[in-house]
Image (cartoon, rainbow over all chains, first blue to last red; front, side, top):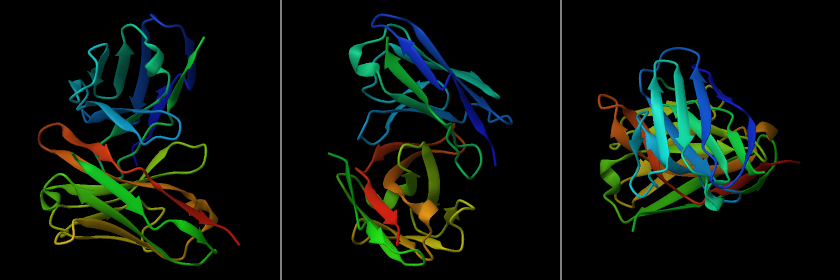
Length: 107
Length: 123
């Protein structure tokens, strides 16, 4: 199975900060990488697919980049509603594994 | 509006069985692959199983292979997950999700999710 490792596991930041979350695959997945946001008690919400493509309705402050094994999700200016847990997920090979998540908290 | 409604969860004893359902509306169900993803209490997301649009292809995580069966009824716009030989480690919130995209064009992603149904395996 392809292992997905996210870093950091948690991050404290302030409204207006620029933050970058990292996801690393145990082998190359080209750009078969998706990002989801999950708020407490809610289902995950797709943000970015195929490495860098915006899902409809996602604010432009979110961006994704990377290929091969290393990927990033950047939030250019944190808003109060962005404090949540973020998961990366590879769709290169079944099983479609997720990272363990990065919890973004208010400083 | 695209909507997925999960149901069928509950408390079951170890070794027991349960069938989850996911009712779809607002889109052409028979045109999309579907998946089940679970989340143990306080833990991350785990892909469990997937099925093609026609139902002709199915896929499973090793942790559930041989115990769980995914299926769909396109005439009823409903996805199922039949679970047998349940274990304590199967305790989780189970989400169905719509699979979008193509493998050739950047891979699959899960763009719509149900609200989840809780399965608790305990004696």
